[in-house]
Image (cartoon, rainbow, N blue to C red; front, side, top):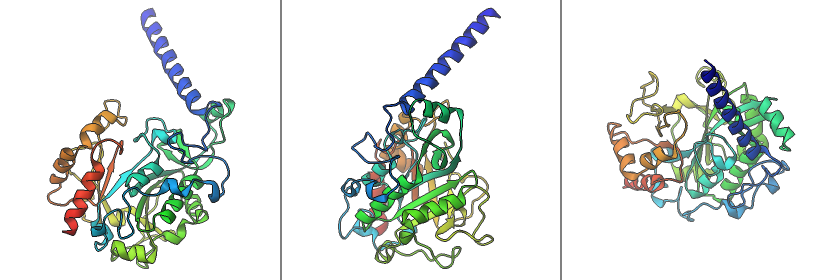
Length: 343
């Protein structure tokens, strides 16, 4: 019994020390959330003015061209729901713990990813935030983009949304999809944050939010409505029965998705009705149910991507969400699929 207590006590001490170390690393006096250590993109605190978010040149899309639509001329004539969009989630580069990617979301956009998965949360005072303040960090309360819990990581919305706006300004031929999971009754705050950011001028907002005749990529670009916003969670219902905020489309009016942590192409839940967008969640967590870069090395390989999509009975997805987007062959695979679709 004494040995058990000793072992348990030792494990608790190790756990507490690990947590303290992580918090100190993340929130210590040296931590400046206004600057991303990866190539200087401004991602965090400081002034809320859009003028100082980032150097526009840092958000110039790789492989973009004046006649391209999302880096390919062949995409331009395709309806947006026939183009494959690669999608990224939270990252260690944004100071998240147990994150899904190494590099900030802005870097994903620059590299060629045109989809973002974001969780909106209302972050309140907590033990972790108290420790952060004690160590000299900045306030982390209010509307934030989080990852399951505010204590695991949170980004200020004005910075991320401002950088997204800059990306759209700098890259006039790029179309972006954002899928929000709304938590903590944050829908109204999220709506006003988007409005305050100036992104509303880019949002595609069809008159009929249910029976959408999806335009071509070129039509979206010509109209400069190059941001498509889907949202779910927090009791949000179909726009057929609820008054959705202007510019927001209910995710499950338009999107079907596969299960998480699954190598099959089975549809999540009982929702098998085909919709305009088909999202393939393409990752596998480790034995602790945490994101795994080692697994991403396998899952993001070209051959594995082909193998997975072949399980979808001929229905190739038009959104693919991955972990550790900088690992493997996701972007070459997306380019190949999109080239074939236009052929």
